[in-house]
Image (cartoon, rainbow, N blue to C red; front, side, top):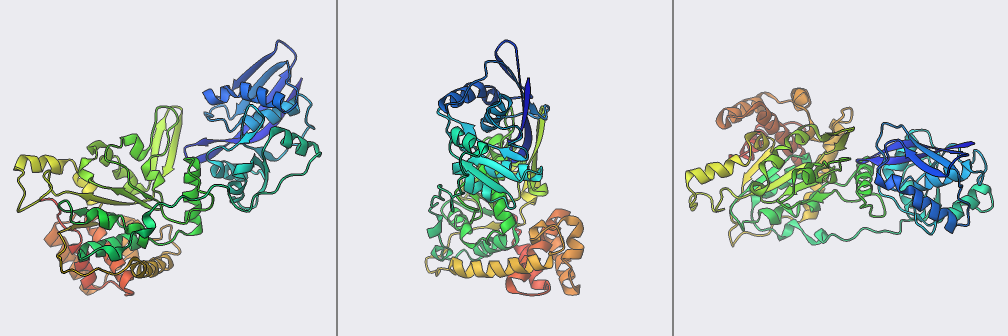
Amino acid sequence: MALAIVRSATLLGVEGQPITVEVHVSNGLPGYTVVGLPDTAVRESRDRVRAACLSSGLEWALKKVTINLAPSGVRKSGAGLDLAVAVALLEASGQLPSGCLEGVGVLGELGLDGSVRSVPGMLSLVAALADSGVRTVVVPRLDGYEASLVRALRVRPVGHLGELVDCLKGEATWGAVAASAERHDEPSGDEALDLGDVRGLITARLALELSAAGGHHLLLVGPPGVGKTMLSRRLPSILPPLTYDEAFEVTRIQSAMGDFMGSLAERRPFRAPHHTATTPALVGGGSAIPRPGEVTRAHRGVLFLDELGEFRPSSLDALRQPLEERVIRIARHPVALEFPAHFTLVATSNPCPCGLGPPACGCDDAKRARYKRRLSAPLLDRFDLRVLVTSPESRDAPGEVSSTVAERVGHAVERQQARYAARPWQRNAEVPAGAVATDIPLNGDAIDAILDVAERCALSGRGLSGVRRVARTLADVEGSPSILPEHVLSAGELRQEVFE
């Protein structure tokens, strides 16, 4: 009778969960039992592990094998535990030195030929092991560079089960982590999009710049062909660069979704789901273990919803909570997960079903009312910037190029980061309602201006805070240390009533 214990991890949403793999080998009828809430892929590890061991010239113990995956109350999914199960079984059967994996984490899927294959979410899995006290981790060779992004951790990349056994016995030396990943970022085609291509649309351009600088949610409303989508698609060209912590968060999500691009993320995500997307696809969910949706993929970036009125009303209302709290909480028995959802929402919409809007609109009052009801008032209230877009004139000249606007946005972001250095938020749009009065102060003239805006526009408390945040971003873009009355009045004008 022998027992071996190996550290590993499984993926829950976008977070890693440390797992202890306990293998018990004893005399009795040959059998292989896995306990501890395994899913189908984990239960099928027997056939993969057995074939991999035999293909690697190792023995398969014809004894009673019991595998416990602790903690037993956490559901385990995927094939990433294969390698940990295999080496624990080899240690328990006496084919590896006892204690050779003490303090070592093991991750990887096994092929029938003994090859060690990549698993999704490696960055989260390794980070979870590091947080649990592991200081050395064995990973698939293809995932070596990704695992090395977790600092203060020794990474041992392997390509084959036999190679790992030789290294653990001291009969071979560990391979080095590749200097760069073997997978690379694919060009998205957005690099060629520049604001310099856009003529006119002065107010909409200003709103786009403020959205990029302050992280404010933006809604552009106008008839088809006026340039709403064209303008929105150029937002990535003026977004501020990711900080290291933000880049790590974005890369961790990409890794968990199987989209690791070979290095830390360099650009902010820009997700544009089709209006036929379901609610689980948009905000996350699923019948078994919930999976992240588009709002999580857009974390630290932009979620762009073109033709907002065509999305399902229930899906749009599901966005209200993450827009406010910047996280998604999903409970499915027996797990409750929290997904990051810190994104800027940018949307476009037609003013009415026919798209023309007044005065050319041919829709009757009932159609317009039905169309407007698709977008609930609480959702519309969360857009700090709401702009009616009209067709540019043929004589309008091209505006500033993206590089000029991006430089101005970058300076505005730096001012905000310096101002909120001691706060848990970094951008004006993130300032909670309870801190608006202290973090975004107004002088006498600016107070009179915001009272005037509140009276003219009949703003809610949320709307009034939104105007104040946008006014602060306008001041930051212009380099003004304080909010002037003209900043408040401009912010009020950028929160238009976009549906008649």
